[in-house]
Amino acid sequence: MDAALLTRARELLLDISKGRLPQAAWSRPAAAVEALAAAYDAGDESAFQVAVARLEVLSPNRVDRIADPADIPPPEPLQDRVTALVHLIPEQVEATAGEADDAADRR
Image 1 (cartoon, one colour):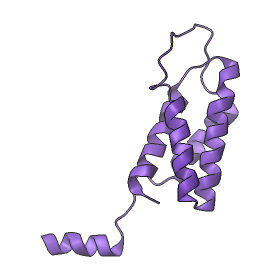
Image 2: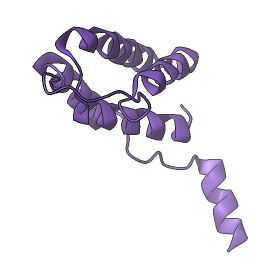
Image 3: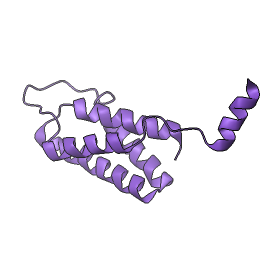
Image 4: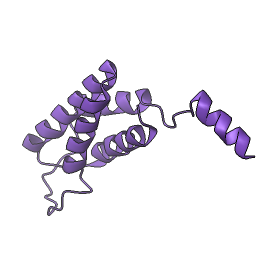
């Protein structure tokens, strides 16, 4: 999968883990996280891109709302899933052999 896409997915997952929403509102991010996990597990880059776009729209950094003292962090099952995905998705994707050769040639 595209390295930039994987990096963005990790960033969005980390954003979700820091977010606070009304309890009932966590179902949409949870569904998006599950879609992302399924696409990643299947190696389906197209579905992964769609899931990343869904997370982008739902990101606490993107949603401009007035904080409510009753807002809660992600429910534990969602937080556990996010943590597992963050550790599963590589932080930095290594260059392919061809890209590494090109970089060596430029030196």
